[in-house]
Each structure stands twice: as C-alpha cells, then as structure tokens.
Image (cartoon, rainbow, N blue to C red; front, side, top):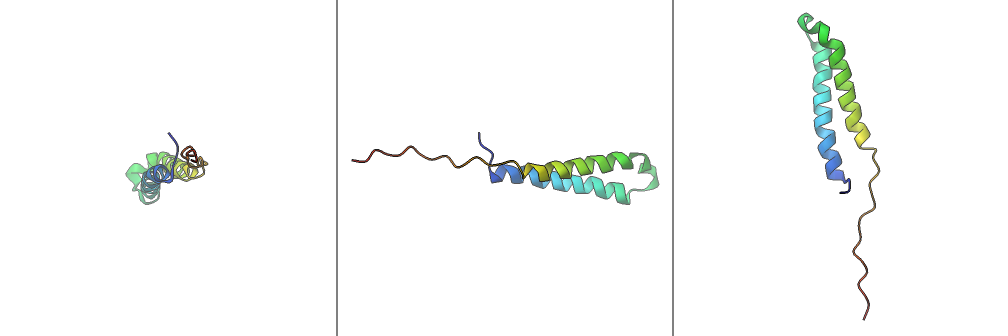
Length: 71
C-alpha cells in the first residue's frame, strides 16, 4: 500500500483541528482547568506537529503498467 495525497490529507485535517482545539483550551481555559494547561499545550503541539510532519513523508513514484508487447 502506497502513501498518497488523500491519505496525507486524512491525517492532516483531524490532527490540525484537534491540535488547535487543545491549544485553544490551554490558552482560554479557566482557572479550574489550570492544572491541565501544560498537558493541553503538549497534546496540541504534538498533534499539530504530527499532522504537519506527515506531509513531509516522501511519496512513492506512481506505479506503471507493464509495457504491452508491440506487434
């Protein structure tokens, strides 16, 4: 199974959305959640970083059909 752009997009979008949600919760969280602020920052950064790093995985060249014998 080869890695393609669609698979990269499927990884990127949820990682960015969840990462942004965790970062927003860390920044705009109330005092009751202050104990979890560091955890939210770490999770948000890891998710966003992972999603962006997934875009750097090199793609394999497209597979080609074997050349048909010429008559």
